[in-house]
Image 1 (cartoon, rainbow, N blue to C red):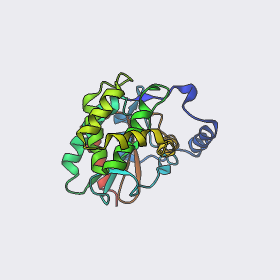
Image 2 (image 1 turned 90 degrees about the vertical axis):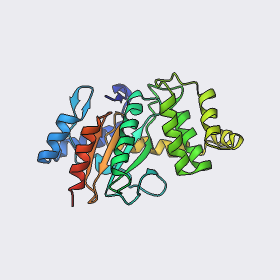
Image 3 (image 1 turned 180 degrees about the horizontal axis):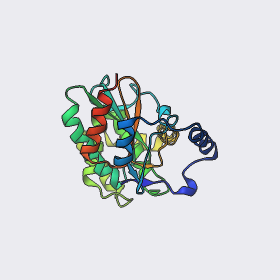
Image 4 (image 1 turned 180 degrees about the vertical axis):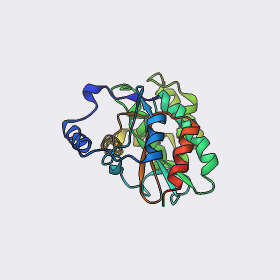
Length: 244
């Protein structure tokens, strides 16, 4: 239940070498945790096991991230997402449910990072990632999340979105100055930021979207691949909350 990068272009040679070394070093599996991962996380029909070295490369969550919920939450879910991915659209609803249950209590925070799959969505994905950053610049973190919610609600995914119509509509609804938004879009200011998110997604083992990493209070990280259902996400959160 995710969109994967085509095999031939998914990894650069250096990244492939690093991951190969990690695999040779061996994966560290944890009894009930590994049981959950092999049964619950699927990518192209295959179970995804936790690899010790890859997910530990996740960039630390900081004030520069888009965070929904308490930044000091016990568990952080870092999602690498593509605005044109239909599975991301589905998972966005699931994560909003998760935040309804765990967000107000400060147990879980949701961190959004960009992973536009240019091979699958060459027309719109990166444009929409830039648009979200410009909304954040002009309207702040709350505006970013409102943009994400409304965009996923209204658009059909898979490069079928008419961005020339939809983006201005959402920008106006959020009270963002349209002229300043257009200037930001043309500036190239966020090109490197989005590229760094993509690089980190691949470094952590991401090969498709949505790709998420659940980080416990003690720093232990668990992979969450694809648009997993609410019950599976909740189960992994409960595992992470018990980590001390």
